[in-house]
Image (tube, rainbow, N blue to C red; front, side, top):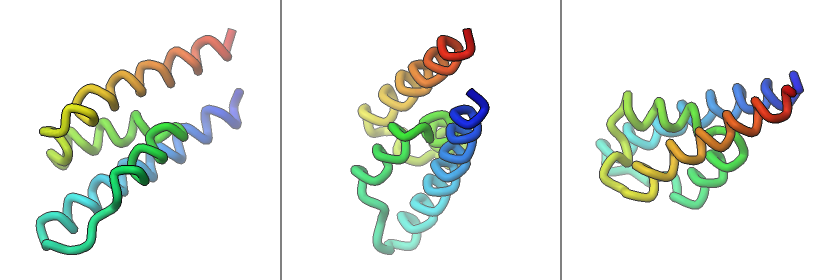
Length: 86
């Protein structure tokens, strides 16, 4: 249980960081992180951090898949953690 929670925390930190870096790259007109990569990080447990990063950095907020997908995936991750803890 602790390992799974630690993994989610690490992936969330990575996801949060990636959202900030990608936003900076977008402003500078540089090469961007592919959406497939962003979704892979989210599915591997980074959705909570990415959702926070999306809100804080105002990044990907107009993309319906991120706008609705990250909150739903975050909820599913939280439910999975709660389920596994019992």
